[in-house]
Amino acid sequence: MKQQQVMEQAEQALYKIYNRFPVVFDHGDGVILTDADGTDYLDFGAGIAVMGLGYNYPGFNDAVKAQIDKLYHISNLFYSEPMAEAGQKLLKASGMEKVFFTNSGTEAVEGALKAAKRHAYNKKMGQDYEIIAMKHSFHGRSLGALSVTGNDHYQEPFAPLIPGIRFAVFNDLDSVKELMNEKTCAVIMETIQGEGGIHPATEEFLRGVRALCDEHDALLILDEIQCGMGRSGAMFAWQKYGVKPDVMTVAKALGNGVPIGAFLASGRAAQAMQPGDHGTTYGGNPLVCAAASRVLDIFEEDGIVEHVQKVGAYLWEKLEELMAKHDCIVAHRGCGLIQGLEFSMPAGPVVQNALTEQHLVLISAGSNVIRFVPPLVIQEKDVDEMVVRLERAVLGVV
Image (cartoon, rainbow, N blue to C red; front, side, top):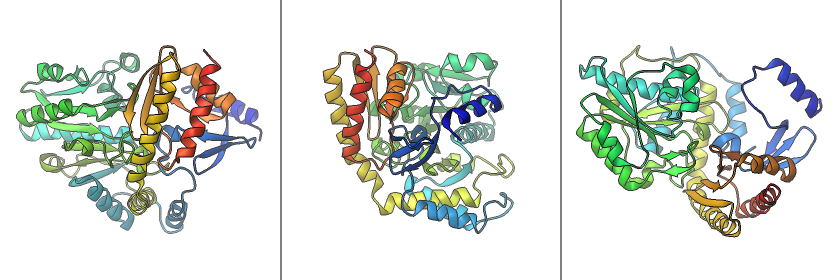
């Protein structure tokens, strides 16, 4: 079936929620995607930071296929070996104490919020407690996650949302101090804001929020759904700062395309939830845990984090050179393989031109930022090729 036929069929059948790009991808290999007509594309979006190992990484597909032939669902009424193994490996990588597997990052955020509320309930705070979130943040689309997403555009059609959410300014410690009080049960934030334009937390801010949470017996929840799993140049971005959260959320690259997320907890937060407080039918099933377990093995065996540090520094250098050549690029932020270029114009036309004319997959963050979240296995030659195609795309719209 040709691409146009597929697109027409999809438009007829599917709820009109997404404005999809006019391409039908058929398969991938390494960092290359191929459409239904056989055209190759260089992928610097990784399925929105999901395909950390790229496509057909040696050993990953085999692990998933082997588990399919054994068992892929039994429910959480029973134990499975992949679940136990993935749990232990994830705790080792993170230094956290307990993990709950979910189907997605959004569900991981929901669980993290429930852990914070349960912690407050256990302290006999009743139900009169508050959560501090950040402006320009993004935590997901479900009502709970949306309630702590600091973007009016996303929130307005679905009000009223969860009460008791107050918004501070990211990297402004005084704005958090002003909101902190005896009702505060948690602060939730991304260690590196992704959708908000690729803004890393400053060390002073993160350490300051950690201290405030300790002072007020509130939980610090760090959302590492996009910036975790090696993308920042550390396994989890908070490890670069040495500031450990009480609760952490993770997803995306954890399953390399297989839908799995998790929230992890330490200390008081690890003891907050009781049997029956939370649940999931599909979460943590043998198939997705076998995928996550293999991903975690590959990260360790093949030095993925160290590779990100090296190629991420090279990407930074090349994007700095590109920014110096074009006045329409006004800022460059990020670290590792989560970087962003801010434009003085809308980024959408550049992203569109890159895809359709240069066969380069990019994604935006907000209206005027292009984010670079490629597979973590890209090489320097891929960075060089991406910059050539990106510059052509920029020149094609300015």
